[in-house]
Image 1: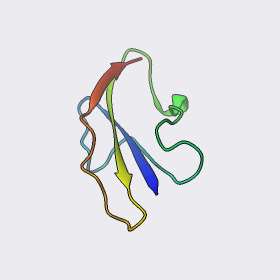
Image 2: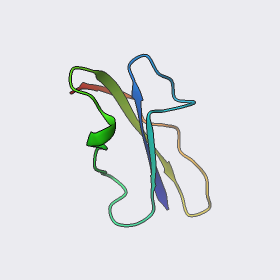
Image 3: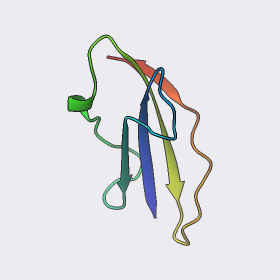
Image 4: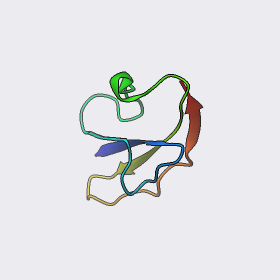
Length: 68
């Protein structure tokens, strides 16, 4: 099982997100933000996709918009 976390800039896209992390250990339901990749005053969106034990991906979650 795994979770794939992604962040995109407000004007970016999910094809080339600003940040992507695949987690297979620990908690699959949370991650730490890559503070060094984010800028104050900017708007971003994040989403997560889960992978089951057979490698099947879920649909991505609804994106959540946040600002720094």
